[in-house]
Image 1 (tube, helix red, strand yellow):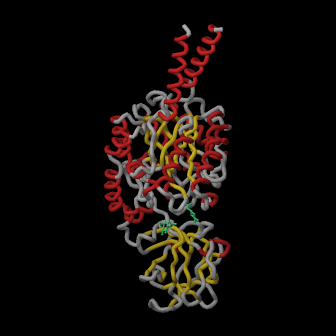
Image 2 (cartoon, rainbow, N blue to C red; image 1 turned 45 degrees about the vertical axis):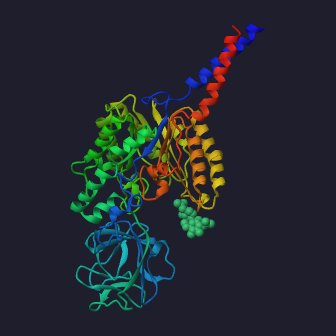
Image 3 (tube, rainbow, N blue to C red; image 1 turned 60 degrees about the vertical axis):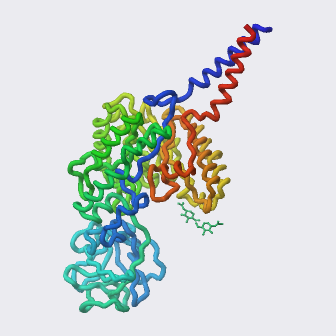
Amino acid sequence: MELLFSKWVSAFLLCCWLIFSVGHSVEGLHGNARVRAVNLGGWLVVEGWIKPSLFDDIPNGDMLDGTQVQLKSVTLQKYISAQNGGGMNVYVDRDNPLEWETFKLWRISESIFQFRTSEGQFLTCSGDGDSVTATAESPSYSETFYLERNFNNRVHIKLKSGTYIQASNDNVLTADFPGTPGWDDNPATFEMTFVAKLQGDYQLANGYGHNKAKDVLKKHRNSFITVDDFDFLYRRGINTVRIPVGWWIASDSNPPAPFIGGSLEALDNAFSWAQAYNVKCIIDLHAAPGSQNGMEHSASRDGTVNWQTYPEHIAQTLDAIEFLASRYAVHPALLGIELLNEPSAADVSLDILVPFYKQGYQIVRKYSSTAYVIFCQRIGNADPFELYQANIGSSNTVVDLHYYNLFDRYFDKLTSSENIQFLYKNRQSQIQALNSANGPLVFVGEWVNEWNVTNGSLADYQDFGRVQLDVYNAASFGWSYWTLKCEKKHWDFEWSIQNNYLQLQPGTSPRKMIPRVILLLGLACIWSFMH
Ligand SMILES: *[C@@H]1O[C@H](CO)[C@@H](O)[C@H](O)[C@H]1NC(C)=O
Ligand SMILES: *[C@@H]1O[C@H](CO)[C@@H](O)[C@H](O)[C@H]1NC(C)=O
């Protein structure tokens, strides 16, 4: 009997030991650790909402590339409309502005613009006396307009010849206003409404112009993230940073216009600081040529997504991966390379994405047999499981999931406890399912302790943060908070930690360890008693 009991105890102890020692761990991190990372968002890929002041000194700074405007004739009280959204005639005949009445700016200078329709054509006018149509597929001389702006967002539009465009009584736009209009109600005066804006690297660089942009970005890259931030992260038990970069980093000494070199030196610095503090780096290709999601953080010019449309974009992206892999593969701080951030499911099909991921994987493997190769899930209507079925690479692969209880109407009206339930019901079960799927490790590469609950209390935020950490800690590769610094306080990791809105637990979650250790010690006592 006694012998049998002690056998059971031994078996139990063996199980406990196995529970502790088996399970995923990430190669390259100390101990049995998983990734506990913070994103360095808004640093080497600019996002205006993260640091609005970067855009402060641009003249006519609310009229940047990709800004969406609507124009209403003050005499007709109708909006300019591209029939069918472009490719046809233009009328001034709409009462309610929707897509056809919305134009994206391409900025040539602070007062010279081109107007792109929702279907992608440009407004065009061949010369004096001609009417405006929306038939040009690409912009040049006839698609270029000169804007004059009054303080109350009234504008005049003229051709290079000096002739002003007016809204005629038969509801077309023609370049035949006689003389120079005043700012009163006349057919050459339009009211401009802003509908949306983009503030990424394209907008910043093209808005300031090369020389000024170079100064602004140099200052930003040298000051937004410094060695002190790595000290901060290290002290909080953060073991990795995920660093968004733009594709132009691969030709850093002379990147294609309007992009500005210098991000490579900053990335080099990040690697040195990381090494000094025993932190690892994940390089994340956040902005790809042509834009893979239309967002400012993909450095899109106007929200159009055409990364997938041109094979040369994909080739350039692979070149960027090759450049990064060849440069950093041997660096002791490199943990992994993420091939493409947030491709949009609506635009980028799996038929394009999977072969790209496979090629990217092979390229990284040419330079490193151990660096993790990270595949980001498609955003929008896509199930990350699609990347588990795709069989992209054989070793050290990771799928990156981005978890925000935001940006989807579903979350708009949730209470704090409904938000927390969602984490348990949806996020946790997805992580568990993917953890046990055969294939890549699971990485929650972006999440934030923010929601669409108004007036959440400090305790509400602490609960939300604690449950998120609890759920994401189970991801087999780990997690990464978005983002280290941000104008919006709840997005700002440093602020959230310093103000106690987000409470990190040390590495192996002592709250869970202590009962297990006590149990083990107890069992060990019983066992030794019986011998
Ligand atoms: C928050 O909810 C409001 C509606 O209540 C919505 O308009 C807004 O877009 C939501 N914000 C985000 C970031 O999802
Ligand atoms: C919520 O916060 C807003 C400002 O942030 C404040 O005006 C409002 O009174 C608050 N509502 C409640 C119920 O506390």
